[in-house]
Amino acid sequence: MAHVTIFDTTLRDGEQSPGISLDPSEKLEIAHQLARLGVDVIEAGFPVASDGDFLGVQQIAKEVGNLPNAPVICGLARATEGDVRRCAEAIAPAATSRLHVFISTSDIHRQEMLKGASEADIIALTTEMVSLATTLADQVEFSAQDATRTETGFLKEVLKAAVDAGAHTINVPDTVGFTMPSEYGDLIEEIVALAGDAVVSVHCHNDLGLAVANSLEAVRRGAGQIEVAINGIGERAGNCSLEEVVMGMTVRHDLIGKDTRINTKEIGRTSKLVAQLTGYPVQYNKAVVGRNAFAHESGIHQHGVLANRATYEIMTAEDLGLVGAQLILGKHSGRHAFVQALRDLGITLDEARVDDAFAQFKAVADRKREVTADDLEAIVVDTADVGSEVWTIEMAQMMGGIATAPTATVRVRHVAEDRAVTEAAVGDGMIDAICRAISRACGVDDAHLEDFRVSSITAGRDALGDVTVTIRRDGTTYTGRGLSTDVVEATGRAWLEALNRSERLRDARKGRTHSNF
Ligand code: KIV
Ligand code: ZN
Picture: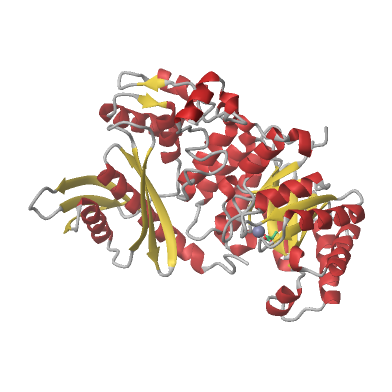
């Protein structure tokens, strides 16, 4: 059975979503999970963007790119010699590397983005840069940016030039989410006809909500690769969602007739991990992984599902790994049981990480009667090494109530300088008070709250509260996440994590040549 390559761009196009700023260690965590999920290619970043981006891609190439059955590790480059060489260096440690070269081809992009480059210029650059890339990486992918708004004759000439220069994959991006399934399918068929042995790839944005539909139609019409992002994150309205397109191909195999190597039982966990680390929540009614995707509300539906789930379900939550064994641990569970529970969930951590996660598990178990599989997964993500901490929190005391001004006192420590600072602040409420006290203690007076979200990991009054805050400093947004049975404490932790991230990333961001394109 024909197999379609799943090319995941969560860490590149996905990371271009406004407000998402992943640290290299978070990217690595996601890359490991993508490998477990079974994606064929991981686009790990845009190495020329900054030294941080370069190192992030290089680290993924080294670690994830050399696992048994490792995915191909890909980096993105504009069609310039500097970009191509820098990208090749970042992906070189992978067992199989892919260099993804792109250039804009539509009239509007050539005029506005490439200083009026002519069609002949574009073809010459394509030939030159694809040829160079073939000498520097195992595989070369070429993308004609804004392909769906490019005059078809010219688009075909450019893509043919890329194939002749040695491109292994030619990508036809619907960069602005403009096309419709029948039109895109016709275009893909024409391109498959000129591609020879090269794989034709599709990269669909979701501006009209059609990214998945367009990708499925393209596969039906001969595309051999789909570019996707977990939870559909990406520029503007995002990219084609991995979970939706893969389940579309699985559930309607009768129509599409192509397979993937995705282990669908890892979809649920991957979706949660990406939502937690990016701070982008999954909408309740999102197809496949939304909280309501398998919830049945009306009496008639519930009756049907009780008789036979297939009355109202076309796939099961078990297929997606969304309902694991209802494993329960409590405060008397020891380290051995904890490690075994992680193993049962398919999670293996190194010793240092087990120590951190176990300590956090104990703290949670002291406050919460039952620690479930969902809690454990959240704890593991929460202990991910998000980079060296600038400040840590040592103590927080909150006072509030009716007719008293909410007050928080905190002690934080500057790790590098080994210096403790204690400060207090009054706020509009307890949450405001703790954020003000932390900012004051860290000497930060320019952090503004942009977004604040609380959700609970499981049901119940003692549920773990999962708080994500987004702050703005110097025109850039940073997210932080905190987990605790106490929402005020979780907020304080999230606020401090966002401040730490802003301290670490502010300098790196200043050096960025292009954060998006
Ligand atoms: O949307 C787009 O055109 C892209 C390219 C760089 C492939 O992301
Ligand atoms: Zn894109």
